[in-house]
Image (tube, rainbow, N blue to C red; front, side, top):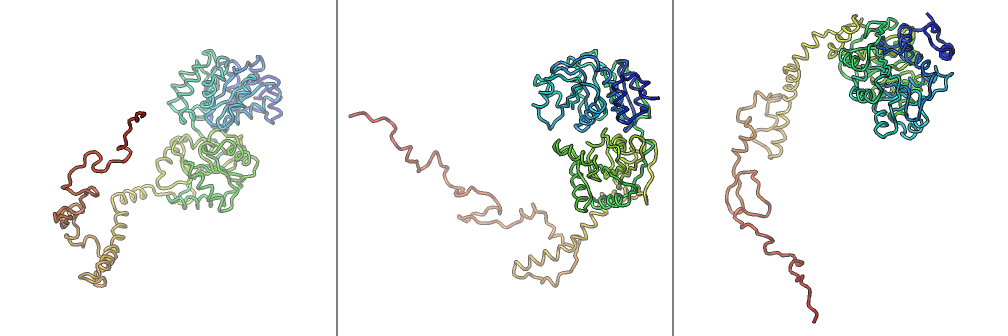
Length: 499
């Protein structure tokens, strides 16, 4: 099957041919005809199969007729992250080279003024993240009554990031007669309710089992110690021993781990960059651009780079941390082995990662092979259980405390100018269990048995009792200012009569 048999316009076919594509992918061949028929579409396919072109190409064909009005976009595409939104804009610019369409990108980290000016000129294709889109609508700079096609890309990621309430608000601002397209690599059961709410009699297009991984990616796992320096050493060994590594993405679960791993690799003189959500938009786009151009060999990233980013030449993906959500594993390793290329994905596993590994293997319905000796999770769990019961930490604490009594008694005897027993006469290594019962008096009991101290009048009072400074117990209470009255209060404030 070729693109010419899908019903696309001549302008779109020319742009596709100029881009070097001849045959559509399975998701493109199945979804494009339904989009051209203006049906709602639910598209499910593993990552890296060309879902973006599945809605970009038919939308360009449908937009050849009609004209945009100021502040009223004709189509709306919602993306969960800024990088995905920018990537979709690039697709429209590439495939719409023969069209005179206005494309606007509404994302955070950029100027409101520049975005307002684009909206005022009229927009055919509006690509936005939900938060920035609602900011413009609340400011009165954007009207959604003219939207004909709504695309919700990476719908499951929208759910994970908490964008579903925003999407529900946006859908109420869009005409009911719109055409809605859902595309995602995974489809958790929770999203079925959203599909039933937002889509009307959709054409379900599923070209691969949901949450499956591409056969072009070689997957494996390797064991490591639980300490961070152990994992970093394993990571460096994987990078050094990798075969045919052109560039690689290293995924971490937390932003601070991204910075830690990035600085570690930088100190070891690797060509590396970092990408996470706390970076400003300019730095994020500059880092991605360097990685695409080959100026950086390694990219340490959080899951902000796991969804939909199209970097075709990525040869390896390393999971420094196993993802806590199994679906994220599918998206992460989908950054390699794209467009029919082969790729390698290796995950570092510690003794605490058993449930995450089991969740991933259950999701992809296959066991991941080990590099080297596999971790004995049962033995590791038994050891952790023993440590929690005090087998490890308690033992270490008792061994550490065995040296303390002699040091403590030495200091006390030195302060008292020599005690009943010289330090050299004390038994070395005496444990807490050998301490006499009289020395184990609790602090409260000890305070109760402390000798009474005398006050200035010879009365005894408990040691440590508090008394207001400068006031004895039998002093009469002071009323008002006492004997001292400020001078300004003694002045006669009555006006003097003229003589």
